[in-house]
Length: 116
Image (tube, rainbow, N blue to C red; front, top):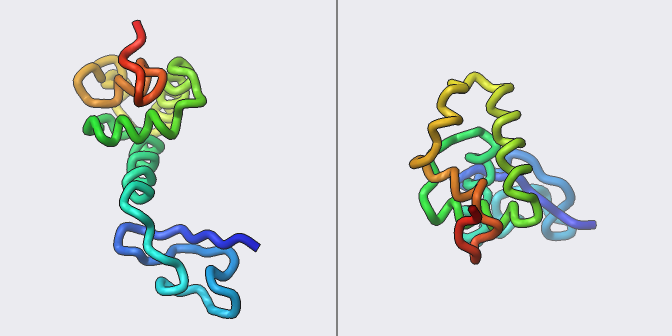
């Protein structure tokens, strides 16, 4: 059986499925801490799902790596639909040119430049 744990930034486990070590109960010590890239990727993904607009270039590259199988149009459509369901100013979506989220909608992946 595979084991997985959902934890927050201070490594507190919110929920876990399956023991990380057979015969050991769930605890912070039974699940090893995530590597830095894994934690940074998770933070970028949660910020995207939360419809946050400002992404530094490093987080935008991580998002592109995670979303590379979705087309640019699908990424933008999903973000706009989720924003429409949330209490976000809808007029801001049209003015996102300098916020860091635009490369996620215009670049195919983290290796290719912008697509016109």
